[in-house]
Image (cartoon, rainbow, N blue to C red; front, top):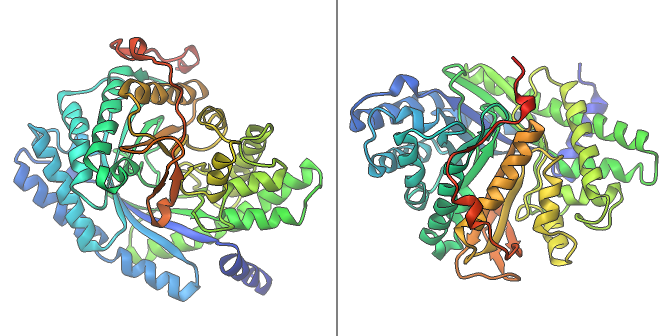
Length: 454
């Protein structure tokens, strides 16, 4: 039972420390929509999304009002369109038509984003997968709410370097087509290794093919809550530090569990997972970098940062799994540059480089996220950065991701304004030495020896 003290404590976390339910995401299977005719397929997709998610936004608002819990986003994820469109799509135009259908459905329902314009190609690309990937720049530049992802690697399959090479070109093309808006199309695209299929966070959300017809996932976040808790144990031992983070993560997860249970019951959709991710926002006091500072590093990127982040990530997971039997998704600490004021400050002070961020991704929940780079960065360099991050995920048996934004017309030191939750970012320096001869090789990087566990 929740007692009065816990109610007051939760209210304080919401009012003063930026605790929120970052998203309620409805995952929807589109497998039943598949058809050989592109017109019928698009009609089926539109009708299916509306039939399942029509009341999602209202339900989220009702829960907010009744329980006083801020629910920032309401989102939809769907079965990867690379699968759904395989029978009906014979050109890039056909896939773009599906993207626009998804966008129309999202607008009608009123959600913030819809994810699943995706392909799973870790072991190889079909002809239809390649068509979808090549269509991404047009799809993202001609829609408002559609998010896209491609899984190019896994610990069991290795890394599809043909896809990695192609995606470097796709990211550059997307940046060019949306250059009038600071290449923001790239903010709606992420490339994965070991992508989870129960992730409620954009841009990487899609509904896994092993999932039910529909499912409710909830992502909850509270970097400000963790930082405030750590203020009280400044200078204390690592044991006390870890216990404080675990207890705080437990409390945050219970808030998400409440929202998930209510949404599931009211929408009559099964509950999937709670994703306990310390996902920052540009708001002051809602920063993962500030937590690292509270743990004891002057700025994110200083010596000790990776160890502090590893500690934080592990204790968050330990606390979360005690609060819900269904913790999943990504769960841990996110380190997106543009969405975290503390990270932005660290970059501007010279404490945080792209190479240090890559090292930090070895121990965090995702990877290189929302990083603005010069618009003239070669596509082979973009692919090389992706390949490095995918290798970290493959070898360490963890999810890693890359969301790079080569901002056309911008150079190192410039600032890019994205607005809203996407925030703003300084354009970061990229290693100027090339990797073209590596990237132009064809085929796959094989799976590591420890992947063979049958």
